[in-house]
Image 1 (cartoon, rainbow, N blue to C red):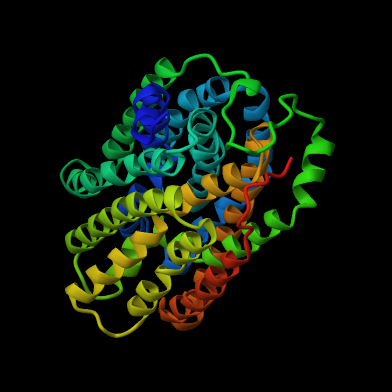
Image 2 (image 1 turned 135 degrees about the horizontal axis):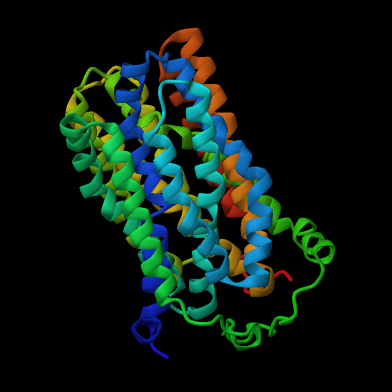
Length: 408
């Protein structure tokens, strides 16, 4: 089958995965920062206090292994159905808040937990099951939808909050999630049997029967490839909290208005869109370690520039674009690496562990941001620090295998 023919023949699962991811947890990563300045202003929360919201990501460390394992066992449709029902209710909870920061933290914890069942961890399995030649491009399309929607939704949300209030906008986001999730579920066909999943030519056919959890996780944890991926991802993703609740606050720290900050987020979203397209095409054609190292290393430049005193709009816009180029590709890369180096029968179990590390990293990053703001009242020291860790992590990806033999 040709490269484009594979995309054409599997358009339905690709559309289902794109709708599911595009209107759920991945989109919230862009939109949550729009609400942040308005909530901080209305309720009088400090910036250091609000930075602690990133710690809610730590709760997913206990959830993601179960989500991944259940997806391997039960399939995408059954797992995603849970989040499709519960995520909109979480936004109702956001809309009902009265200023208690711990209530807001609790809502965020629940969103992260139930939203994981409608995120890339679950929906990317549809790509792993149906694509071989165009897998990188398919993952790109899957994860471009949230960025494409964010380019429109973020400025619209900022306008909507000013005109109608943040409560109405939280309810609107819940409706978007519900409609998108139900549409995705309707498009998902019964899961293929694992023995029908195409594998890389000349590679041994994987065992179609999932083993026990002890056996499968033993295989994963003994893999050198797995540890290279998780350590490199840990170093490259310490800056993750900046892209959710802290982005607008960080931008406003540079002396720009809320509307200018919303425009900067749109530039960032455009960067994620372009970065994913280029990265996805490159992963299908060139060396996986080299493409991964380059893609994950680019944010170091943008984050370093944001830490400087060069606070003109062109510099900020260029920096946000550079950050977006790579940040947009990280979810695609995680799914591609797991599919590339691990057999499909343990795909979600492995990807669940990788996602655990990234969320743990995000929680630690949130704590570091809060401490930095408390001690210096500036984001700059943290931005310089993560620029260095990203550089080291990018080089670690060059240690990944270049052969096609898969683990498991």
